[in-house]
Image (cartoon, rainbow, N blue to C red; front, side, top):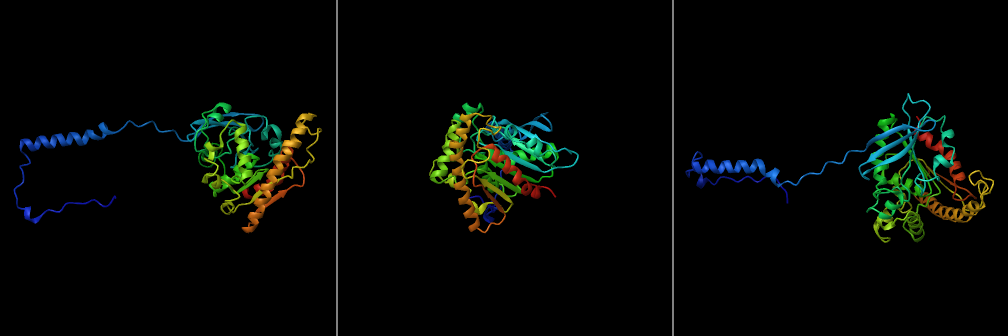
Length: 362
């Protein structure tokens, strides 16, 4: 056990005994050897140090379409560069807050993205806010994985390291704040897989976000239904969910279950939504996103309807739990109709923006 230095006391009985002559040849030789050992022992015995991993930093920034900017940020935790899109406000001469907007299971790496499926450029055109959209993270639940995943690595063409919670809550915000001169006020929103992530991230970083919105997610990740839901999403990318949170009966599944951890949700305004899974206004062949494709329509009705019904079950359970806890700052928007599809998520973003903006803007 470490303690204070112990200094030997001089025995009075030996104080008067003659000392060896410090200038004798044998003594000088001994001291020379000891000095050489003292000077060179650290260098000889130390293992070579690996080069320190650089801090998170801006790698590249280039103009995109309209007021969008294409950005790459290096993540030390994931040991690779991460692509993002940033929608800038019209007035860049004054600092603006930041909304982190997460894509669903596709992570923005396919056509199922906020940019491709919604009106966000037009909707945010007159809003004084930076909208930051990661363009990676497919099938990852935007969480820190316990192990690298070779299946996701092969599917997505990366190194299989998924440390998204570290990246989103620790590495990325300082880089965004510095690069774009923000106010330091943040909010976060996400759909489907990422809606679950949004709740988990607010628990991990309770002082980072001023508000949050979760659209069509399942807050229950550790019960039988929740684990099945998570496993199916991860498996769709060729991944193994045990590489993410360990064995299904392990503690990490419960630690990342927002329903079980509801008491740890920060006291910030939240908007949480889901549909019943029944057909609604966007579930017809006439919807522009379906472009008359009957196969896509039936997939949206059957698969999308089933997924949304499961999300609705989870959301209603979370509503009951947070009401038991006395939470009054969470808005639940439980629609009587609607499938797991983009038309409803665009509406959700529009409806939740006043709540998010009130927390972001002075």
